[in-house]
Image (cartoon, rainbow, N blue to C red; front, side, top):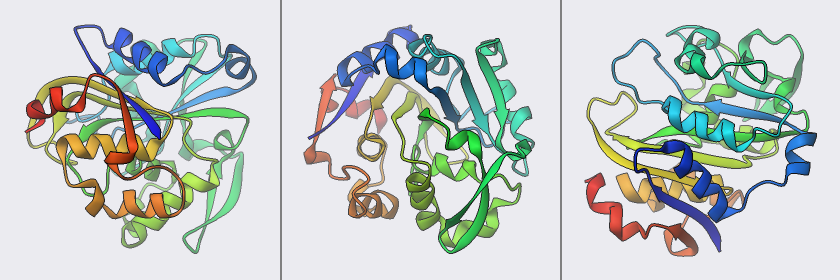
Length: 263
């Protein structure tokens, strides 16, 4: 069974992320030292008061888990709300010689790939020996949280041209970069949708090495029904992960103990 850690945050998101990794299995120091760590953070609009993106504390917890790495890249791409570099400033207090903001749209070192019948140029940072992490805030959205976050790997600013093929594009991106090694949903607050018109404090992080299973647990908590979400079920059909909650072993806090707070 796929394993996903559900950990309550008691004022210390670093400790919660660390506990989640202990439960699902930490990466070996040898592997961390050999590879760059690429963290795809999800931030659509950095200027909005609706902070529907991972907190500094949760991203800091992820960084702390990979402190043995040579380089850790926080990556984003341009969109019509601003450049990737501008939007990454949400986490600027975490930047250091080791932790580097990286705009995928500015990289001239690219690889040509075929994604859902489209030819795209993706940054080569996504293909180096790496540990790839996807992290986003939990939201009620039929296109998902962790998986939809991969849409931001496309470097062009006007990504809406691809919305009609969104699910195959997301899943092709998942496959072409070699998958997601670690998925972390920041559910310290839960949001009603992609624009976060409503949100509430929920104080949980969801951690796992099966990104589809992590997405499934998040959807089980906040909705919609993961068995009706095309992105999850198509990912499961491709063998990219587990899309049925009954086949996922929840580690840490039982899901029944926290589900009520996500209503």
